[in-house]
Length: 357
Length: 111
Image (tube, rainbow over all chains, first blue to last red; front, side):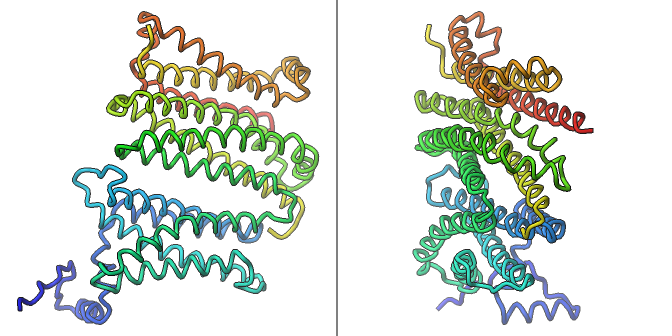
């Protein structure tokens, strides 16, 4: 029987003491070697590093006044990683076009490992934040659901790092992966809901959730147009129609109703009498007008995608594809800007009420 | 003549760019002109509601105008209707510009 070829490793048999310890440790714990072999820094590592730094900074800055914000930021970065995993997964299964000269599987694996570690980290971070405020842990729906998501993420990362022959687990890995996407989205929604429920801001919550869904739809459109497969124009167009509808009905009409009734009748006065009146005078006053750009951009995007579905040859035009990506990117940016401005206004209202956040 | 897909696409992009420019400009004007603000309020009861309706009407109107105008090859050429990417970049620039200007106006107003 031919012995298996030795596994390639970037770890060298250094003569120094630390090098020998490193190799000894890797012999007993092969997943550490896997991690180190994968430690060739690229854009995804930088994204992770950036997200960790931002999460820590936001947590420190908002810990006293809005303790849930750091956890929410971490959840949002998890969603971004999830979109990358779904994109690379779609390329592996052939639903999306692969980029030439790019090995997708290592990228998919690396992002999946980071994602799982990040989700587990966010779960323990949430537990720590809850416990540090003297509240019981794992009693809320958000906490218990977080446990489920963390366990699924752990199952994914352990199978990726420890088990050498993963072929028999492919089906289970795929099912857990498909489950994690809606579970994580639901978990973020439950988390946001838990943060604002009972504060009289349910309409604002609905407004924000619809904005969040449209954010994912714009990201989806960018992915479909950037890596087009045979059915990409149809899927992108459906995403575009839903995003435009959500922006017009969900954000414009519901948001407008919330602004003209709940906000003007109650919250505006609270903010103006609180410690951050600028949140209304500058942020809200600007937001209510800047927001009007978003439905225009999203309707324009939906019309553009409709044009592409009517004339398939347009997808071959680099100018059109680039224009669609730029427009979807603009809509994505505008939704994030609205989120940031909306969060600033909400926090100013809570700060003025002096309540627990 | 029925315009090509590229020209139709560019017409939507131009309509969005001009709409955002006009709405951004109207916002600045209504912030400095009490009389104009009063006119907006008198139309629907709140200036924001009027601005929202105006946004929809201007956008729909401009889509119609640019779509019809681009049927003429001469006008389509003048509009650079064969350059959708250029217009999408202009859309981004105009949106950022009007967003920034609106913010500056309210910051100046506050201080």
